Length: 269
Figure (cartoon, rainbow, N blue to C red):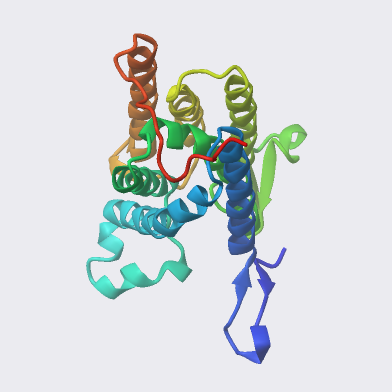
C-alpha cells in the first residue's frame, strides 16, 4: 500500500502525510483519552494529563531521535544537520520511553505530584500507544524478522511479504503489537485490584522487557552496540531487572507513595 495517507496536501508539492504519522497520532490520542479517564477514576483532574503532555511529547521525540542517532553515529558524523531530519526516519521507542520518564520526573518535581502514582496512571496509555504504533511498521514494511522460506508458513500474521525484497519475513511488528495488547490487559486487570502505586509500572517493565528481548532477537534491523550484541536486547534485560527490583521494593514497603493534596486533586461533592 501507499505509505502516504495524503500527498501534495493543499496542492503543495512534497507536503505529504505518512500513514505512519497518522497511526502514531491515533495511538497518542487514544492513549491521552485513556490516561485522562484513569486520572479521573483515581480522583485527579484529567487536565493534569494535558499539562504533562506539553513536556512529555517534545522530550519523548528528542529522546527517541538521540537514542537512534547515538547508535547510528557513523551515518550522521559527516553531516550533523542530518540529525534534524526526523522526516527521513530514525526514531527508537526506548529513547522515547526514557524521554517520557524524564518528563514525568520533572513534572512531578515541579508540581509536587507522586511520581509512581502518575506513572501508574499513564503506563496503560503507553502500552496502548506502542501496540497501535507498531502498525506503522506494517505500512512502511520495516521492523520485520528473518526470512520464511517454508510456503506453508507464508501467510499473515505469521509472516509479512516485503515487496522491495520479494520475500516473506517474520511479522515481528505484529508479534510485538499482540504482546503489548496482552500486557495491556494484564495491567488493566491489576489496576482494578487497587494495587500499590508503582506495581503497574513494574509489571510493564518486566512484561515489555521480556517480550522485547525475544522479539528483538528475530528482527533483522536491530541497532548493535558491538558485533552480535543488540542494544535493545541489553536494555530489555535491564528493564526487566529494574521492574523486578522495583516490585520487590514496593511490596516490602521500602518505596512508598506520599499523600497528595495539590491542585490536581478533584474536590468531593
